[in-house]
Image 1 (cartoon, rainbow, N blue to C red):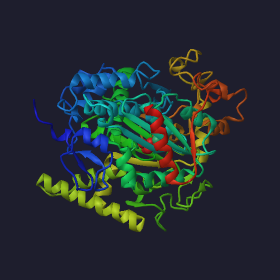
Image 2 (image 1 turned 45 degrees about the vertical axis):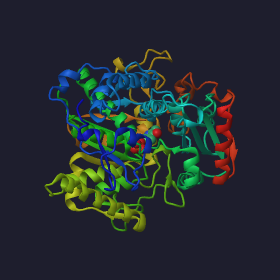
Image 3 (image 1 turned 90 degrees about the horizontal axis):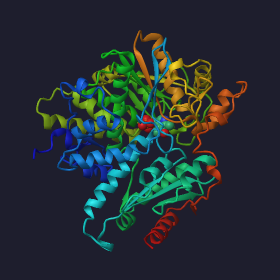
Length: 552
Ligand SMILES: *Cc1c(COP(=O)(O)O)cnc(C)c1O
């Protein structure tokens, strides 16, 4: 059998580790030097990819793409196909991530990524990651009994939106347990119900008396405590896990090919516009583009937590806006409540971040591609050193700046837009005020995959997706005849507060029109959660106690 290629071996962005396997990278999450794992090389597409893949299903595309990054020695082709099929059989839309045209005259399309079990885009990655964890563990445990078996304990913290995607990814999986902490009384009833009504006995919710920041603090302490780590074999499925990025590459190809079919044009000029927080979603688009998908631009759309937007405007990546370098040329005060550490609470909470954890991966490729060193290993080492220096500065000084060449390289592939809460609401209203093309209107049955977001031929955006659409509308004004594909990352029913705020003056609009049948009555189902004070030792006790009950 052939050896793994460079795109099937992984290194750390900070230069401390090389030659890792896919399995190690997935189970480890973070490299020991604190860096993130990336493939040593980005693979290029087969020459005839477009004609060979043009009618492929989502699952077949996923297989074609994943195979470039995972050696068949690690996961034989049949097993990989099986994992992919099981991961996407939980989606309600037959083609997994449908492309909807919002406005024909503007060539504006919406890529709906929320047809998974928890109605958010994170399902696309986490359904796959859950099955991968199980696959690797079951294989390691083959023929082992009882105590000998390796058991992983996945622990995470959520502010409400993303915990359920991790739970649905791992529910019922062998040799894995999952614990999700959330701040007591600070998540919405539907969010809490989405997590606590899952009955599988390897799923554990912990309601913590404190804030989301307290939950994250506990998480950090648990992971940095060697005893806890060893005793429970802690693992994470957070947004820096490489397998999550990999899984997201598929829908860039899938939507591009869908657009080709829908427009009968095999070379459309396409811009992807991505509502961005931790930079995981759009980073997958960068991989797709580097592999050879003909994308004209990737547009980073941020909310008022705009560190990335400021980077593209100034070349400085700073937690706080640097005086005189404000991206908008003025003071960016939109009234959103700021936390102690500087994160603003906006109407798009899944994008409320201070720094974007996956941005480090892009930095490495920018450092690598702009280096004039010839010898490849030396060049990789140099990129790792640069990244390590920048991230060190971010930690000690709160930010860093990059060279003109690096900023220019970043601008070749990306543009950025910043969208305020006010503009978010205005966009939900504006799109609701437009009538969808006839061909895109749902037929009125609630179970039709793309209905549920429509009200009488009018589309209802969730606040995150609205940020992508707002940024697209700006880009359309200056961008000529390009097709814009805005990524839609959540179903509006998950963020009822913002949607109701936006549409409260629309006559005969009722939120019930977008409430999926899966949400109806959910808050009345039996719920299961442990509680803990804001104390990591108490959470550790809960973990120990709950694991015992699982084994019985
Ligand atoms: C996580 C999330 C995002 C941001 O994605 P990143 O990969 O963190 O940039 C946007 N919208 C929703 C609804 C999300 O859950």
